[in-house]
Length: 166
Image (cartoon, rainbow, N blue to C red; front, side, top):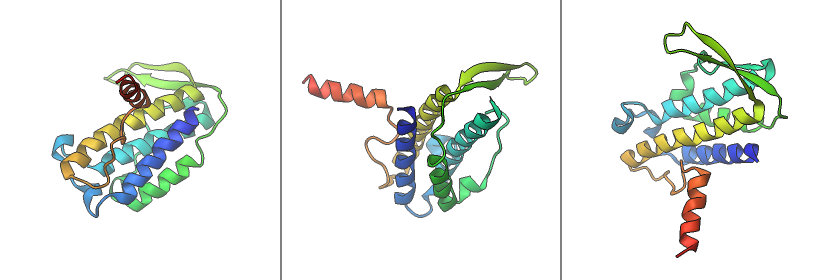
């Protein structure tokens, strides 16, 4: 189930990027403190890629993940990377450890987790950043915006239950 949800969200993200007007990917957005849609897309891809690499090693370190600024500026490259991630997310569950450190960075701890738990986290994290991107799409008045973009499954279910009760 979690793989299906994540795959769906990545597909929604790809569609938005395909539909996004020329130039909108890299525009600094006032309501995002000057960040761009590309910056949030890069973050989504990097977090997911970090999790997948951690599945191989047994340790996920989101804090010290690799950054690739090309993802922030090259919309076509980002779309291809999302496709690559979609084809590699399905995994069997196994125990993992996740690096956690204090704000100062001098107190590192390994937290117990699992690959399914981290996929659930990545799915929610992706939706959260899609909601932030949605604010940018609204500011830009983009035609790529849809009603359900960046809306959590629980919110969609809740809205549907309200409509049924009326």
